[in-house]
Amino acid sequence: MTSTSWGDATALLTAAGVAEDTGYYRGFTAPDEKAALTVAMRIQAAWAANDADAFADVFTDDGSLLLQDTQLTSREQIRDHMARGFAGGLKGARVLGGPVHVSFLTPEVAMVITEGGIVRPGERAVAPADQIRATWVITRRGGTPALVSHQSSPVHG
Image (tube, rainbow, N blue to C red):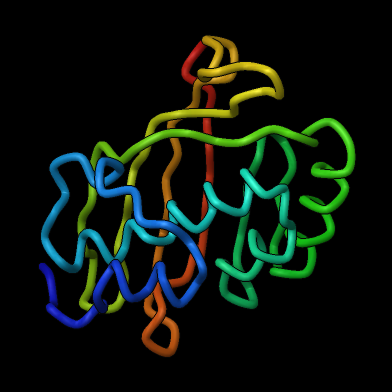
């Protein structure tokens, strides 16, 4: 099920101040798929800038983020957690990845599955121990796709 009103990916990313990485889309190049995937590109840009505000602003007010064993259930909790991380152990880190599945559950909700992980400072690629798969639940918010829920799981062990 898909609609044709999720927006133009290039325009959405430009409005967010994020450069479009057309290679990120892989085979998911329908306009609505690309628009939904702008959420992941905005998250990657926020990580690269170590910008907790930009990271949290991708989420809905009641957004949910599950990282390892830490469950965060609001945009403000996410902002505070990421600010601490970017000032500490995640300083200089970035994330890389790409989609392996995109589906529209309703005209207003998309589910994306990605693979990738954290690239530690000084590294060029995701180390095997840092590889993850993630599930993203995305909705439209005032014309801009927003992240309702993100959960990542390690690929190893």
